[in-house]
Image (tube, rainbow, N blue to C red; front, side):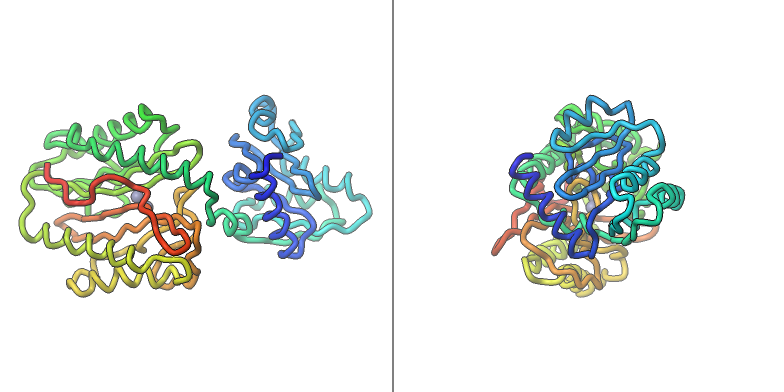
Length: 363
Ligand code: ZN
Ligand code: ZN
């Protein structure tokens, strides 16, 4: 096992013990990837003693051995939960064992199967976010990949003037973005690319449609790459034409709100205080009512991770966190403005990972 994965495994063993369990069953695939390196779509991981047991099916025989050389790979034909349960029963026929599992990612059918196959010798302990709490602090190696992922997405948005223009459909713009992400080395977009134009830009999570972009409209572009399993996330707002004073004023306010959040972001503060800094600024401009979501979120192997940067979040920001700061305003019938960047928190300083220019793009 490499020093890196050894260290990760040690942290997981400590967290398992702290939860009062002797062993841990993982069913959330991003957590399985984090601990073992295996990125297939069907797996259960059992951390037992000093061994990582990885249960998967025949489609992944070669991949599992390649990606998770330190794990003991079990290629199975029966449902994974059943095999994992039977394995536990066969190893501990008499002794009572306390096994932690991930309450948020085991469905009722799997859970019933696992329990039944493992028998009465197991005392199950439901856990939530056991691995996620470890994942929220990124290692130097993870940060390096996240820098590249953020740079890749930034490069695509910097090319927006090549393919964002009146007459082109939102879906075409989204297709162009996804194509360019892949051409630059992404394995795919980190979420469904958002291209929302005109009044539709007032929908924070709009899906691209056949609607064509028109002159004198706002267009929100929200995109991200997956690069070597790590997500990036970036939003820029475009105005097609010369923006009127009202739109410029709003844009300035959102920009200032993001700066205020960035100014408040450091190790030791609560996530809620970062959110409130952005909200306060928009309230001062009389735009607070149009800011309808949280200020940001952690990201990494998944697009949404701890810490959540929302209004009432008491969670402490820690060195090693990477969060988005994405204040926005959404005015029904008019449109929306959002600016989103990724910021890494280090001891005593922050680092903006996204590199695209931040001003209002007038095309
Ligand atoms: Zn985004
Ligand atoms: Zn985001």
